[in-house]
Length: 206
Image (cartoon, rainbow, N blue to C red; front, side, top):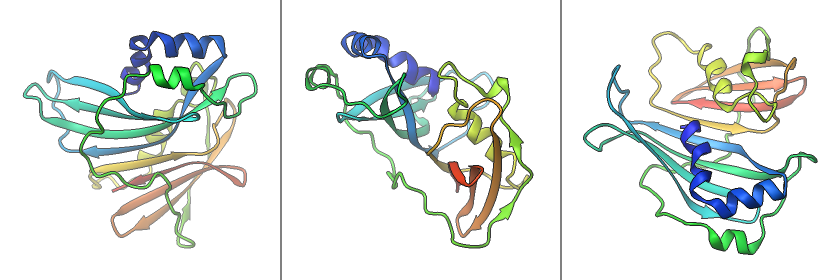
């Protein structure tokens, strides 16, 4: 999913050029995944990634994975924030660049809120996890998928994941220590990954 989302920008040369000139990047702020069916080994899959809305500081996309018959295996939507690479802060995209974008229809899935509400009590703290070099991507942050990987390791062995939401708050960097807290909710589990007293990411599994 991430590779396809990254390669998508090659189909929008004006946006790619603008981001390069402005020293900007798009960082993932939230992603929701619906699991329709887990593909089997060696199945032929098609991954599509399309933008359905773009605002001055945020972009919204669908990334779906289909099987050989065209049926969806995974449905996702995500929101990315546009940031200045040097300052590390939100930065607006100009109107002309937004107008140049090719927007596609918003695909059908169960869209949930991008904010994940943590229970006020009942969390179980887990042993801290240090961010390693293998966790870091080209933005020099912990790769988005690695938050999910770390959180999934804390789930019971017999828990079947049918959906997940991730809210990214503070990017973890090399050498940071993530302290997980796991909450058991009616529909599954929520894992909060914190750096000191600040939450870095929240992952909800249902």
